[in-house]
Length: 153
Length: 174
Image (cartoon, rainbow over all chains, first blue to last red):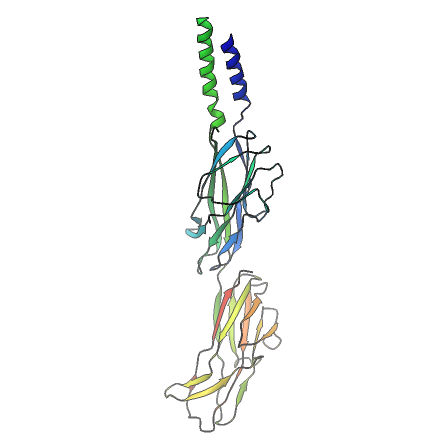
């Protein structure tokens, strides 16, 4: 009977630990880009920087990993992209601030490990597009993948 | 007691299999997007033509003189800002000898239109000796005109003279 009590407690704990979810709040939007003129979107740029929100168990530690593109593609051509080692920021506060985040200048090329706040965690990502002088006009896109997982800690 | 322990073990195993759902990975995908605007093109549509000049007498071609003033036609993206830089000669070179003839451009010798002005009533007068910044018109057009003054000496050798006048343009990104 003692075992059953322990197991029941364990099951309750498991049930109270929901899987994390990612909400995609904003794409990384460069807008109009001039041939030959690099364009940078900073992580502070509201409505242009990429924004993700991760929800899950408050206080739980998660690992965060980006798969970043090196080019945007369009109509058989591409635009080089650069993500610098300070292009990411995170805020775990209940009212996250994009312009003054709790954790700033993070490296999106490395695995980031943070604990979810009471309202989860919000990430922002900036980047730079490098169009060629003779860049053909048109629309270009690339995919940015964010993978998060509980570390168990 | 043994039965209870066995049942407990089964339940525990089930619980262990349930737990990974809380540790599973979650993946979110967004797009990076950009729209590249059309490239610039420029055409030298009229040379700066002084025609016949008399030794010892300066000759002026005003920027407003259609068919004689230098003219460039530029096309690009509507309302995009451009930088314009003229590279001006100080002399015209004789086409078959080493003789030269001085040429001068003053601070009001160039003008431009964004398509809403004309050569005689341009949108702006610009100093050809310095860089300028101006926006293409709604139709993505710009015209630039340039005049100048040649100063043949009294002993100026006869013949044809020419030099390049170069206009360099680029988007500023604004």
